[in-house]
Length: 334
Image (cartoon, rainbow, N blue to C red; front, side):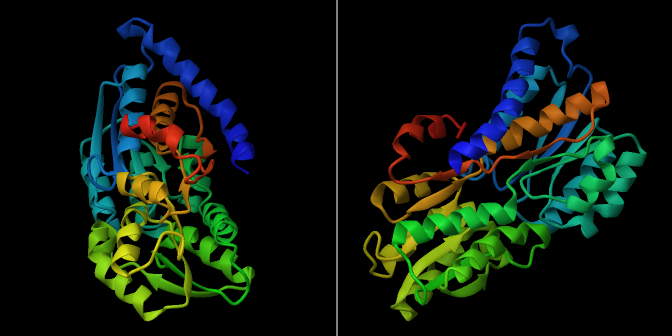
């Protein structure tokens, strides 16, 4: 699966990097991004494990393409903050605004229409806004991110394989099920576990824990201790993935006693993979989720190109494969 998804990305990634390389060697006045300003929602907090590689990708794309200014916006994953950031960006009259889909299409609909009517390019990353992408694709509204339901399903498949799980085993999925299309990640994960015959509890992440996952540690520790037959935990929240090893230690569990599948490659998640507490984490190539929307902004603003849809859900990282990626993760690329 990882090899198949990677091949699907190869042509787009090579083309993007070729554009970047060619632009980097051009004179500044010839750069496609000259005169273009971008406001870009990054998601979490500056430098955190679920955000850093996106920042790196966006910054390197902006530099390579000669973008005049890239303005980063951080929301601690709060949907209402993302809406407020869009309003602030629009008031600045930039060339392009890159948003995240967590608030949902209904929440963004009027604002995106207002921006497009004013000639501002709007595109999306990390979480899809399918109705808006269909409506404004010709004006450059693209998507760079995972096919969320399939990403969750892939994580579940790896949880089942890693834990040799069987029908009747107990699992828990902790996620933002209520968040519009964003919740499709956890639904794909939970549905796939249930289709394999597992008994699944679906627990909703509060907004407080969504913004600060450490607040979930006592809650999850108590849950694990109250469910001694628990065989698996799944999530599609990068910050939560990073705390699960600590949760299991506090609950008195040994590595592999509860199979864990998550997402992203935060430092604590890397430690969890190395220790065996985390069995698989979805690799959504956050660098591309930063690089490609900036490229989209420039290609549309400069050359009137329509929106591109790019699935960055390349596969999973496991304890066996993490070693070769650590230096790239430390560099803010993977």
